[in-house]
Length: 470
RNA sequence: CGGGCUGUGGCGCAGUUUGGUCAGCGCACCUGCUUUGGGAGCAGGGGGUCGCCGGUUCAAAUCCGGCCAGCCCGACCA
Image (cartoon, rainbow, N blue to C red; front, side, top):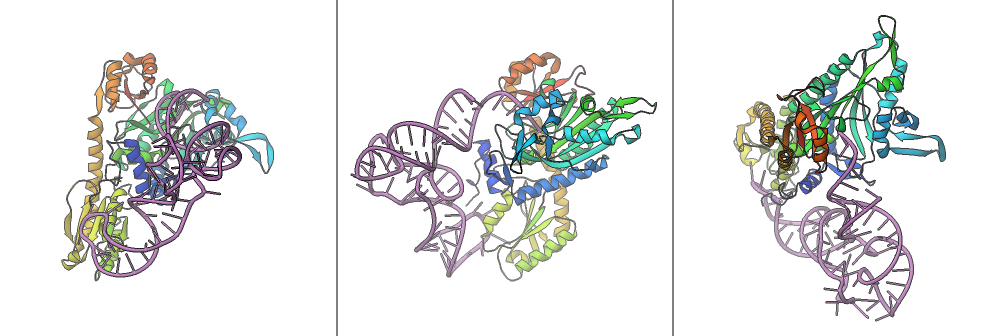
């Protein structure tokens, strides 16, 4: 009656474990069209929490939400050559509408640079209109060859920010600000996923960008997952879509732009960064349910006590929920909540009630402990804070133990079998990068030796962080 | 699109070599009773034109032909 066998162990078959978690924690199903997914209520609740936290930070960074159409004229994509080259193979194109062939096919957006910039050109006239800071939450479609739920699906959910600035410096600074203040802060303080930040190499750059910054996380199998990107687009879209303004000296100038996004892929990252053989581990700050109050058995007063306590937890600002489905055995329900990664279970049975106490059980670390009923809210609150910290520090220590310094390509290959390798970019170079690519090892990012974000990807003495990726 | 593999109740599979005795197992689901402090037990029950089309045969999940779909590895990717 232990929980072995509920999930395929990670070290036995990691992809299978991932699939098991998706099913058993009721996160998502495959959709009927290849590469699509049905996000189930609990999986969607995780996404909604991510959205709320990211959205708040985006607004603090000064960007406003707007919404642009799903359909884009095919000709828009053609305007930027790198961009069209990058996305053409994975476009979904609509040629019929209303039962008739369309005069011009429309594409389902794979990203919205083109249509948003078409409108930026109308909205930007003067330097007083700058900076223009727009974000949208949307679904996008990229016809992927090998889909995987949350990590790479044909349709996915994301936010995409698009901005226009007067100078290159201002655009670069804003892209970096989003990277740090929105994405890195969210991932580390809410998701408790430590990220490596840096620039993409030219080979890995976003189609149409002059520079791509990124955040890379390590999954429990040692592989990398790109959690988010922030791009400097330069002036190419401004030129193609004629986004010009009159500067203070009365001269026409093109704007400098950025775009940046994080997606429902982060749900997959969350699963694979923290999950263990008992299921998902959700850090308290993200958790849709931070504490579940479980009625152990339907004995006198137990269910009532659970609802009362849940109300007190909610009043203390804790996202709490009651499990009074005593028709199912206790073990079954405890395991189900564990699979869903709920940080704290507050168990109340007749024995507890007799003693005016509850039993606290923790998803990660620590023994069960009994707490006087009146002290449960403050205890839970304090523990949630500690759990949040420990999940991040554990993940960081674990990741760092799997990053090795390398001096040769052979050493990079060696280290990439279990984690990441760090090698001076000057030593590896684009030729070494291409050679590693044949073994599915890529440069995840270029960063300064101390791990900080360089001012550009051309800075000397950069370190290339290499690994296998999703 | 290249290479390998697989299609049998919701999920995972056995059965195909040697055609008949084959519509079967585990989990899940439904009903009842007993249970409930770490995935409960017993009893009963519902659900599948065996991917599709055609052929061979007295007889096809099983043999033959064609088609379709999916999975894994590669190129692509938030």
